[in-house]
Length: 318
Image (cartoon, rainbow, N blue to C red; front, side, top):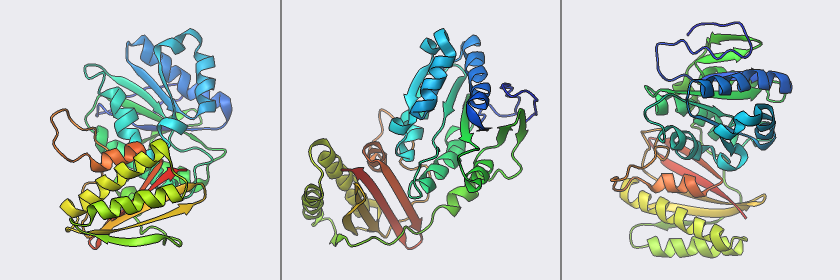
């Protein structure tokens, strides 16, 4: 990577077609200096440009771009990326795959002040997994970080998940880039569940029973309509995966946490591919869509896997 000296510069000199810089900004001026030129340079070059950032920053960019905003694909990350596990397949890849013959520019801001401590590990793992997900692709993904509001640990993690850092008017290689270590570090056992319904143990014969159990408890805890359908789908996919890929059996718990319903499925399988559930399904793909579908409907998915088994915990707003 090569260094530049202007805040708005988007020089992308690199030996690789995929570029993934983090932009550290303080205040609106630095935010716009680091993002608006990036967008406009892309538009001048004829590159498709997408912007997926939290609502206030989305509106700020739309206003600053003026007439150029019409040529940009805008997404509110607080909606599209509420679950960090669906950002790669449903935001980044969805846009990049729609333009396979040209360079693509994307601004993605998945971490903002207000993300909870429960969400954060999934956020930082997402940032780390962008790198293998796009290796060799002709794509630049710029990730802004609010250096005023985010704590030092978040910024330190950004150094580890991004090969390039843009800050204070300069661009430089990250001295601590190690995305694989980040994925491993945040693969930690999940906090113990509070008082919960279950565990309900299941094998192949008990799949219908455990699914009815989950839906009944979901309704009791406040889910209805589409959200109850989402619960039924996610439970069906995860329990089937446990039977087929997780040693033939598993267990399920369900409980309420703040304003969300939480459902947890455990089995004896191990996930060896950190990108499972984050690759878009191909048209002719048979199977392998279970965790992808769970990411699509859930507000958050947390995973822990090791030699002893796998725990998948998903959250749905009531």
